[in-house]
Amino acid sequence: MRNFENDADYERTCFQLLENSLKQKKKKIILFIDNIDEMLSKFSKMEHHRLREVFMESAEIRVIGASSVSLEFHYDYEQPFYEFFRMPSLKGLTTEETKTLLLSLGEHYKRDRVREIVSNQPGRVEALRRLTGGVIRTTVILFQIFVDDTNGNAFMDLEKILDSVTPLYKNRMEKLSPQQQGIVDFIALNWDAVSAKEIAQKTNLKSKAVSSQIKQLEKYHILEKEKTDSKNYLYRIAERFFNIWYLMRSGRKWDEKRVRFLVEFLQIWCDEKELEKRALKHIEALKQKKLHEKQALYLTEALSRTPLRRELQHRLITETRTYMNYTQSKLKNYLCQSDEELQIVAIQAIEKQDTRTAIKKIEQIKNKQGEDFNALGICYLISQNIDNARDYFLYAVEKEHAGAMYNLALLYETEFKDLKNAEKYYLMAVEKEDAIAMSRLALMFFYQNINRQGALKYAKNAFHLIKEARTAIAYSMILMWSNEIDKINEISKIFLENQEALEGFSESITQFFLFLITRKQFYLALKLFNENPYNLKDRFKPIYYTLMHFMKNDFPNEYRKMGGELKETVEEIIEKIHKMEKDYK
Image 1: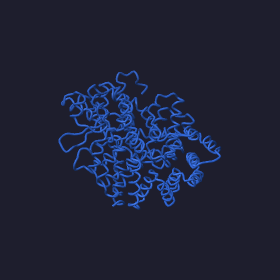
Image 2: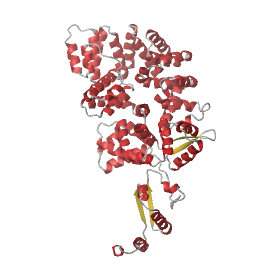
Image 3: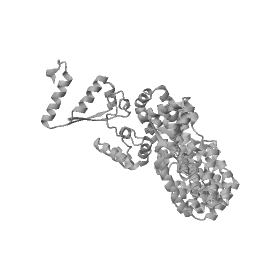
């Protein structure tokens, strides 16, 4: 080829040499080109024509290209490559395919940590697979994150991926016309599918203009449509990860929270057993001041809304507050309050995570009372010395301390799984009219599906003693179990119309809605969603769409608004409800 560099027809001469050589050797050439859109965009129109001519006339060369954006010249009838390429869309990886890919990458690059994460933290992989739609490019990015990040969590993994795809997605938006950008902005911020009429109203565009632009955006694979019972369609962002990126980078604070709530829900659903380990690891990272302030806030906020022990939850929040003060971060204003404020000097030491000081101060007390032994038990509980915690709770119980009776019962139920002893100490606290112990005992009976009459008695007494979120949730659950539905609407307002209760007892409230659906109280559940002032549909979005699944006959189009990233989660919830129906006939 170098011999013909000065020829006027150098390109055609070189191609002829190549083609003749391939024919002579009876060979074919396949070119694999990533980001083929970037290469073709640099070609002139004449070069496009010439390349088309090569593809049409030569059987010796084939091209397989990959592009993360739609090729505009493939859909423009004035361009040489109009409808020329075969354009299959790659589907997202399944759970098993994602694991296989990550394990293969880890083996190829000799990274044992990847196998450890896939084996021991399946929820981390699965939560991000659902959010990213199983996109292969994103999964490969995840591989590098797994290798580099020794204290990772799903939210910060998501932050890193968002940073890496920002140039790509930003360029995608900039290529759109102003009208198209306005349409995408509205749909992305809305998150759920919307109608063309809604788009026209919110963007101040005429219906014809909206329809025309939607067609173009569908061609570019930016929008996808969902059929309804009428001739009209619903539209949503086709690539859900692009939608998440837009919310996180362009949305308002509440939009960002919607994504965070989704991550939180998926993490809880996929990896419930890892919650306590995550909390302890997060506390350690906060103490060592390793974390970015945003990571410190978001993970604490997410974990504080999961069913952690109250002591651990308080420790988590106060440590985060200490860290925020150290960094002088403005984000500390968004940190939620702890469930309880500690009172004596020893308890103040626990606030600072200084359990040694707390224990030392309490041990200096000569005439120890029940509350002192109870505080010691709490200190050892936070330090994960479960045996010592049990011993000190026992000392406090001997001194008739009702709180220790409850703590001991809770310890037997959750840590030792000894329900017989748990019931024994709950009943001791019940005799002292400890409303929380009554409520917890009722729930223990409920989850074990035993002693329904006893559960109803304890839940009712607890609620009449203290009308607060915990007793109200328990009473509502037991009333449903006993088929006394008429009282639930009023009682549920105590926790559903209370901001702190919604943040502090989200998992319990989730169970409340699941059992409400199990009991086929669909219209009551819908009423609670619709009349609530705190955006329950956003907070418990998977539960809401589960409800819509069971109410398809009444609201055929509402279920269709659900994005694909929620499909598997909702199916899992539906399966759980069917199991609960059998268990609680």
